[in-house]
Image (tube, rainbow, N blue to C red; front, top):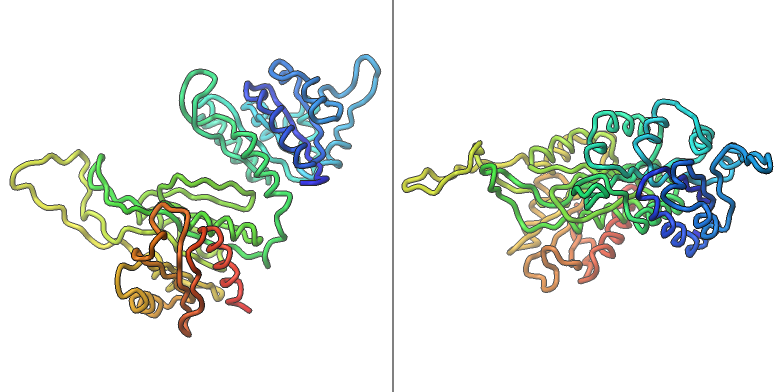
Length: 398
């Protein structure tokens, strides 16, 4: 981030103490950092600390009462390449969303030409309050980028969402935003990832061992290549933040199909790497099933074929890439799937490949197109696999 001009806005929340560490990270990456503080934030972190770490004077009031010097909010706005407000309290977010301007930080926000990023931090009940949800949606519609709050222990002693994203994550997000490539021909990729869960009853479900790592690696590689990404993921412990990422969390195959149907028409490419459960109970029980003698078996029915739906509902020459995990007759089964579903590419991996395991960080794949085998990518990190796959996919229109 050498030479990048980052303006930090600090508001009056307990998480303000973490901003000292964020400034240190940004300065170590050789960014230029200036800071604006609301008057209330100085109760949580000293302006002297902020000034010393950023190596710049800190703006708090519109003017210095001792010297009469004016803190020019327009000059701040014109200087910055990005304005990051962290922590962003419910009070500040509410004022931003409703056009209220009663301090230097807000005046700067309303003068910004570059992007503003807000990093919410508040107690869980506030974070889930309808007023906050309305206000944050308003800011998104106004073009503000949002780094969602994390779950964890809160200052109130409660556990849940509302905790400010950690400084390392914020710095990574800023770096991704400032270093991103121009949008790749204004193209968007829809990626599915992870497993699905098909409810048997409120306690049990049918699923598989997929971790979502390959799908998240593909999303990261696509973002770095300059694409915008809709990432539709089943339950996964993986995380990824980026200004051009729209993450959609789903549970069941039906949920995933609904999400794909919503976003597919906006995409030019679909990469369907999710391990969607093939079957689901014909009817999920509303209560926990008990073990009883002579209990009726659980009757299964097929889930919707999301990959086939996407391939059959293309618009504007969309490209469809599928994945095939096979246990035997691998190449034969993969090629059958490619032809049956009219795919542009299929990515084959096998449970028999040593080291390429569920939940692991490595994979080995073979890529087939309509004319046959394209390339085998030997055992390596899943992100390296993803980078090469994105490069191959980019050639489909060449």
